[in-house]
Image (cartoon, rainbow, N blue to C red; front, top):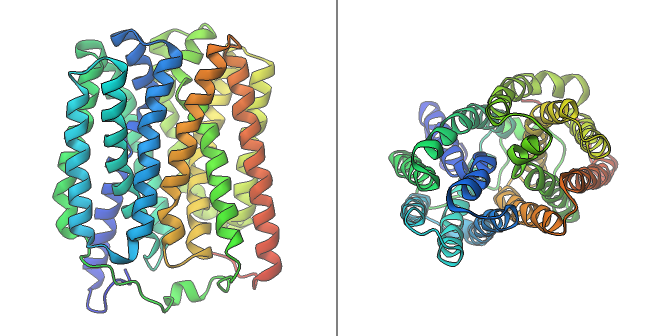
Length: 397
């Protein structure tokens, strides 16, 4: 990493893995979102609408924590900041276990999300300053995929035996365990102004701040898609006539497609470029969701879920890699969790509102497909403007 001038190569690698571990642990509630939404309905009697609102409150906290981290990024001692955020998040997740009513649960979920957002934004900021950010983000997404499979297998078992409280306790345990890697983080922030040799082979930095902003807008639109669909994926499958256990198996089995996307991202980037790959993935996802909204059958549910699992990680890797090139300082990357948090908060709330109006899951699918299409259009603008104002050198992993 380029945070100090005395760090050895081995120490750099250890720091990278520590930052990846923090990024994975801090998003456990997002990975388990469809199970949590279902658990609140089955275990504590929430309606689909209110379960979506609780999830949105959690993700709104992630938004606020991410924005705060981006604002403070140049003044932070990362060890103290991340350590404090992890401690608070673990404590508030524990407090969620004994409180079942809406108001206290929403307050504790917001606080837990706020602290998790601070941790996630910190990890992404530090990873974006790595000499090979795209490679680091590829490993991050791959390991998040594997963690997602564990979460989707474990959370239903916890809910079946002990209810939603057990899920919140498990999340607190993951966050507490993440404290073990905090000493491996850098201390006081020392952002280098000189790009690394790896960065020097990429496109020239742009002076137009509009492009990172548009890229963050595309991230937000994409995560409205994810939030509105992913929060209700389990319930949607049940509504289309698929047995619950089979849905859980499909959600977990999707990890194979997600892992394939991560492992092939480098080859795809070299063959067609990450911008084209990103546009293709967004277009595929939008098309699948819109078709599923028109043809709400069990077969289309399986196809759409497979497309989502395949494209989700492509899109994440290439969006993070693009932002790292547009803004090597890492400040734009620190705002990614804010964009994701705002969108993930809006997504379940919008879907819950649609369901509350009695429009059904087909309307949720059309909503998700529309926002994915808008994300593709927004990123197409970024791609075209960037190509016009930059030297076209291929970005490598």
